[in-house]
Image (cartoon, rainbow, N blue to C red; front, side, top):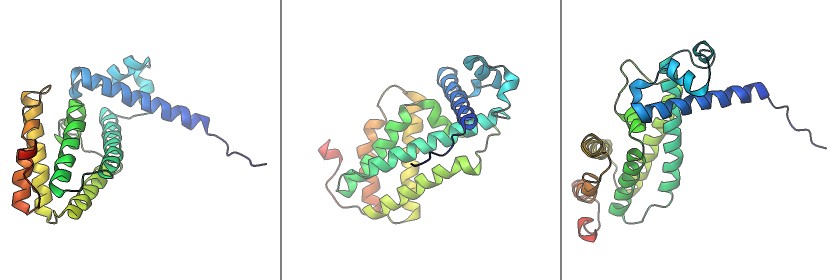
Amino acid sequence: MSVLPNRDRQAERREATRREIVDAAWEIARRDGLAAVTLREVAAMIGMRSPSLYSHFDSKNAIYDAMFGQAWTLYLADMREHHARLPEPPREAVLAIAEHFFAFSLADAARYQLLNQHAIPGFTPSEAAYAPSVEVIGLLQDTLRGLGVTGTADVDLFLALCGGLLDRQLANEPGGDRWLRQLPRVIDMFADEVGLPGPSLRSSR
């Protein structure tokens, strides 16, 4: 008869409380903005006294750190699944990567701001929280390399193009698609620059 390992119920409860705190912080950020996240506001939302919150997070930046790591971990898992079923033509695949990043980003403006815009003065993610973002860049580089985008500067250009369009979209038309519609054109320009084969994306849309 096999013996199941003893469960650490105290650790499980502690982890569940940490998740509840982070979820509450995201709710506040999405409702009122990232700067509105405070220990007092988070504690009130989950029915906890502020001093008790310090046994789970010692500062507001520690909550931001948990949010940062959670969000990049989510995107990394989503990205792996998406990259496993990219279209074969290189231009279409690069466009699909960009569209996927756009969709993830536009689905949650507060999340995008925390991950990509240095929106919190004085906040620097910990090494552990930053690690999933490093994996994201590594996966992106490997995928683009397999499609024929081999230069580091070319990957940087791709990221700058996507980030620039996203910033314009979120700043000027967060609920629309004005800059999203530019993606086929921009990826065509990028593909021409780096020498990716294939018919024009603009002509097929």
